[in-house]
Image (cartoon, rainbow, N blue to C red; front, side, top):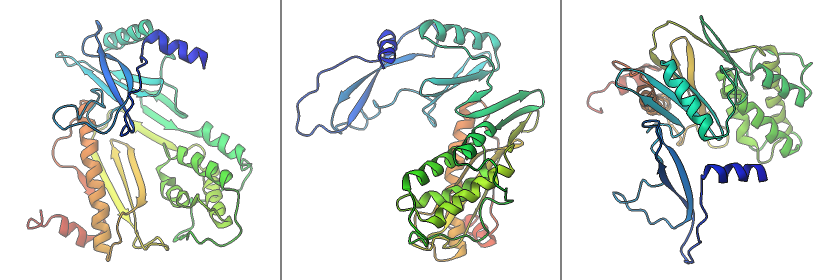
Length: 347
């Protein structure tokens, strides 16, 4: 901890301030100060944590809680030049990765950051947050094989018999589970580890989203459902996503859902996945916020949620110099829902 504090003080990332006594003070607020540097438009920011109430006013200080980052993703930074060069920096806590189309720009950024901060240059990206990255002229392959092996070993499943699906077809679980109560801490640990694996495994997203709904008072049948996911991973340990080089970069979405799949509240589960080029880039599976009364309605809600995510992805791609031309295709397997979405009276 002392070493961390010394590093923070050396970089002058914060300064102490007095806590103002006020009975209505709740929450905290970050105030960002620009630290000018010689590296163009990429600025470092030092932050001061100030105790303050919710007194921001729109048009005055309403946006002070954010530093200028990509507008659609606050951990993404993009620098571009009038000559067409650009660089992308993605930040997660104290780890960052960067890429671009100008080697001189990349080397300049690397030297500047190592001079300004105590940083270690790990070279070409091979691992990031548990994700393994393999780069070649054919493309980029990402997976979590090593992490998956650690999870299997942690729960003594390294020698388990594999299964061909992550969950039984038509599986439905109630919060009033059958079987004996089990250790909730151990169950939560398993679910959290499975959630980590969904970073490169969209094929387990639905099964994981199903078991994570029941972490409060887990029963043995929940545990069996989660263990089945591990058995599936055991048989697909080397699965991942391959992004092939030199293929058209076109965003395409797919959406689907069940009808009243949740036994406890009759809500449906929506799912979507988006591909860009040869690989999937974003996916989700979650319960819908309302109870749908027909297949058309629940499919329309699923398409609507996917449409909102499409808008966000289009903004991200535009920030990354990959603006999509024309409308984005979103596939849905319900003809009534497609007709409603195309109705020019409603839209």
